Amino acid sequence: MILTIEKTGTLKFLHNDELYGAVNMAGADVRRASHVEPGEGGTWTVDLTPVCGEVHSGFATRSEALEFERVWIEENVL
Image 1 (cartoon, rainbow, N blue to C red):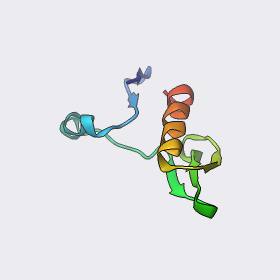
Image 2: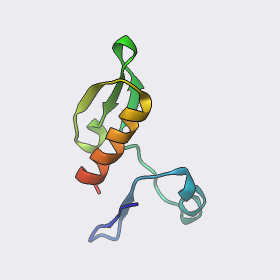
Image 3: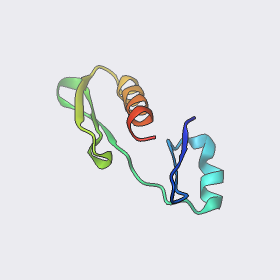
Image 4: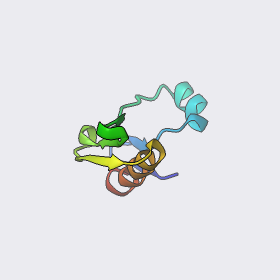
């Protein structure tokens, strides 16, 4: 896991179910970073515009799209 602490004290990290209890107890403000949705022709699309990214399409499987999403967010947001 990558955890970023900004100068303002804001923590940024990629949410996962293992953190649910800790995030819930801390009263964190959880925000959507992207949208992984079914695309045309049975492919998957990753929309990273909520974090100033682009839309990437043509992923053969949802898990492939989710992995792309995770790597992109870790490299460009965190």
